[in-house]
Length: 158
Image (tube, rainbow, N blue to C red):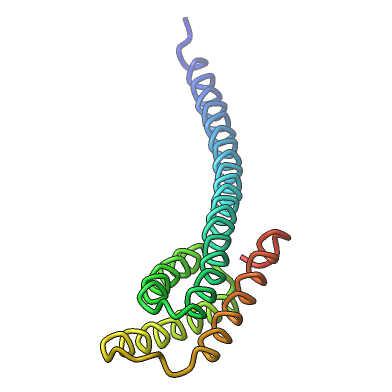
């Protein structure tokens, strides 16, 4: 038996094995890329659902706040303001565009000012200084939310 001819088969087998392994790695790479795309799409859909849920709750709360403030229920408005800031924080964490992120930051700052004014008025037993300004700020926040929700619905914004 000539063992030297088996050496050539061993080399050929090694080359074939290498090519099969390389093909397997390429296949796994394509599968991983596809899984990442699917994961990104799922994350975007979840963010949109969270944005819609928090955005709709925030929009409803804004309308309630306007009514409460018009009725002079400062303590209720104060607590709703805190809740609304938390909802805006939830929306902010869903990965907004830089423009919407800035708008939410401004809205949260405006709400903090309203909350501080309400707190000061409650402590002094007085009416807050400028309810019309509060309502204007709340309307502006509501407009921002509607813009964010419409962009999320069309798949453009987030």
